[in-house]
Image (cartoon, rainbow, N blue to C red; front, top):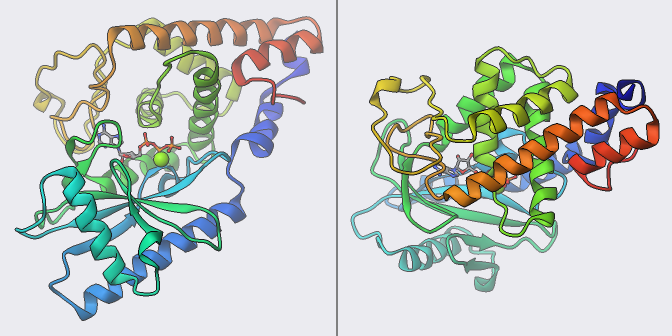
Length: 321
Ligand SMILES: Nc1ncnc2c1ncn2[C@@H]1O[C@H](COP(=O)(O)OP(=O)(O)OP(=O)(O)O)[C@@H](O)[C@H]1O
Ligand SMILES: [Mg+2]
């Protein structure tokens, strides 16, 4: 049987070797982000009217769910002030100009507005920091309007609470929650390579796994945890609304017209999957069905060769044991 050839511990080792961002790299990148944060803080200390109020690590590096293939460091920057531009392009110019003020040692071309963020280039580490603006109105819990990296719209949300939300699931399922998130994200990357137009946002992967964690899945057996994710996506057809009660009553969620409804755990009015069409949801369900079948086949395959063949259908040819 397949388990004899590839079991939990083999998947765990594959994750260590091929999927996860190595710890020393993660530490280097986090230190780089910390230096930026400290610079903004010290500039703000000396210039209390400075409109950049906070800059913090956001995204996978903040949550401990980054893949080895990480290609930039995500940070979010809170911008307040009555004269802050509301137009995204102008806002990015404004943010770039303020960042250049706070980092006088940087050459202007090292701080560059992109479509929906500002990139700060570090020559030394080779990894850029992508700074996403948040329009901030002095909310004590640090809610603000985040510029969506998908379409540039403003999303009312709360990054510190997102980090806290994920941290809570990580605490309840130490090691395994974050590991299963990374394994599923690795599967998504492979699907993106193979299926034209495939999308499955990391944030949605995390929220679906959070829901499974909250319902009692323990994730400690990786083949089983992966299968649970695939089964959930297939069974729900991705049309089941997902809501959390960490920060609001589920009854606060109104009605949405979009086919996929995975609601932001910190704002009942924000559907985190609002941009997914029926066709995209169907493609995700198909991919999950295929992956589920492949895992079943891997778990019962008679030979090692066949077992690996099926796991490669899930993770691609880099899966070797
Ligand atoms: N639609 C959204 N509504 C609210 N917040 C969002 C939304 N999309 C992204 N975010 C915020 O941006 C963060 C980064 O999301 P993203 O999906 O890019 O994942 P990531 O964890 O950075 O993974 P990756 O490794 O793919 O970059 C999320 O943790 C969340 O705080
Ligand atoms: Mg990211």
